[in-house]
Length: 136
Ligand code: FES
Image 1 (cartoon, rainbow, N blue to C red):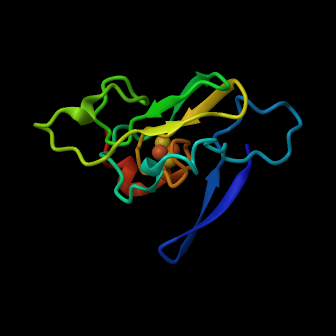
Image 2 (image 1 turned 180 degrees about the vertical axis):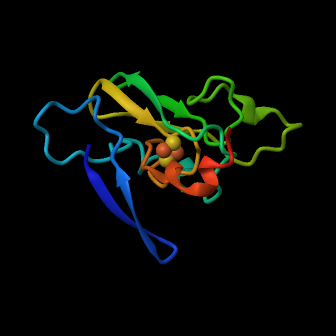
C-alpha cells in the first residue's frame, strides 16, 4: 500500500492508497484511477456530495470500454452504482449519477461514502472522523 500525504483544513493526514487489487506486484506508485469520461460529463462538476452511505469503499470488477453510473446521491439500493433512485420526485434529490469508464479491466475501489474528491474512486476521504462516526 502506498501512503499519500494530504492537507485537510490546516492539518496534514496520511492516507493509505486502496488500489492494491489491480496493481501488479512490484508496482511502486499506485495512483487513484482516472474516469475517462471526466471531461465529457457535466455531472462530474456537481458541487454537492450525496448522503454518506458507508464508511468504507466497495471493491468491484469493472470492464474496459463499458460505461457505468456511480451513485452520488447515496440513496441507490444497488450501491455503489446508480439504480435510478435519484429520479424519485418525492425524495427531491439534486445530485445526478456520475458516468464513468476505466482505462483497463480489473478490480477497483469505488467510493461508498460519497464524499470523495476523485469521483467515483475512493481517495481515502472516508477515513475522516466525521465519516467514520456517521455510519455504525
Ligand atoms: S469510500 Fe473512500 S473516499 Fe469514499
